[in-house]
Length: 191
Image 1 (tube, rainbow, N blue to C red):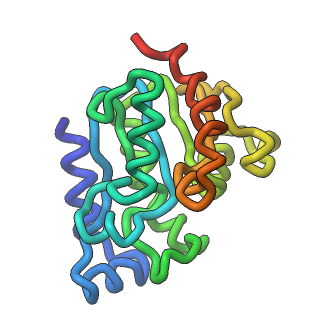
Image 2 (cartoon, rainbow, N blue to C red):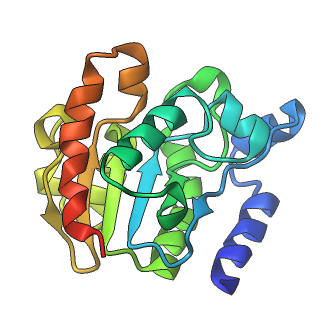
C-alpha cells in the first residue's frame, strides 16, 4: 500500500522532537509498524522498547512473546493484524511518552489508521488509550485502564477496545489469564 510506504518515509525523515536525535545517536531504528495493510484489527502500543528500537519491529521482545501467545489463544495470526505504537521512536530508559512527543508522533498513527481502515482498534496501555479516546470523541469515557479494559466503545470509524499492555504479564505472570479473558472479545471480529 503506497500510503503506508509514504508514512514510513515521513517517519524516517522526521525531526519534530528530540527522539529522532536520540535514535540516530544510538543507532536505533524507528518502529513504524508491521502486519497486514488491510487488517481488520490494529493494536496500538505506547512506545518502542530497546529490542524494538534495535530491530525496527514492534513487540519483538518479552511483551511481544506475550502478545503472540494472546493472539494464538484466540486463533489470530500476527500476520493478519497490524501492530504499531503511539510513538515511533524509543524514549530514553523506556520512560513514559512526553506530551510534545505524542503531539509530534501521532499524525503518523492517525495516517496509519486512515490508510488501513480497521474494524477494531485495540489500545494497549494508558497512553495509547487516552490518545485514541480523545481523538475519536470518547474523552468522557476515559478511566484508568483497569476500569475499561476489555470493553467495546463505538466510534464513527471503528470499535475501540482498550486492553492491558502485554508487558503486565511479563512483570506479573498472574495477569496472563486476565489478558486472555479480555482478548476473547476479539473473537467476535474474526472473519
